[in-house]
Image (tube, rainbow, N blue to C red; front, side, top):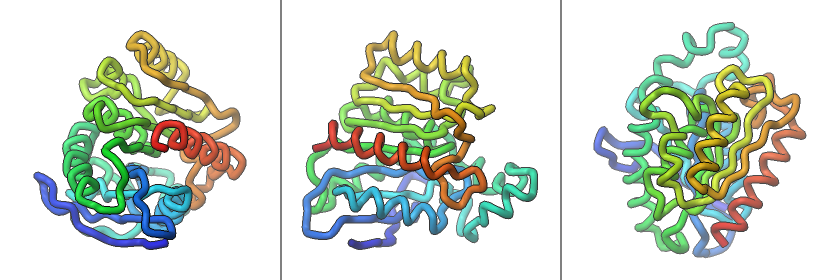
Length: 246
């Protein structure tokens, strides 16, 4: 097992990123892991390695690199403050679906240059803000993305010109979306709008709501962490990639 820190050149500067690999020499399929709104921190490294241990080269880019260096945020302190955006706004608003999708072109170029990556088809998974990015990337690079997952992703079907559901007609990979049933950023009417867009476009997809789960349930450093729902997320994610990347 290995955890490597790298810099990936993008149009807007060098993006710090982390690479996780399984034991052995490979090659293995690649997965891009789009982080949540609290930025790079130890819990994401644990998740990246767990995914890698399943047999994947995992790229975890710091999509907030445009903010410059920042100290890891303490999730408990952020939530205790009562004002999430006041605590994370200095990094959160430095990217969006469009800019992250542009950055992904550089991420794909980097993965293409690794000897331990098998094939051109990759998977993506994203959490919170990263969920919308994961789906956006699936519609932006349809010939490269074999599968894309979103977990407690918000704003997946809105009136914004950057809404991921607008790219449904371009998606070719399999899509899996898991939402919380108590999430103001992904209410039932939005879930219905996304489901309709994917269905009308003929996208191979499955959208679910995890009963009792709150926004952020996969993150072990969040007060709303739900161990049972988090394990369900891992089972679904590994099944998705096993069916599409192997």
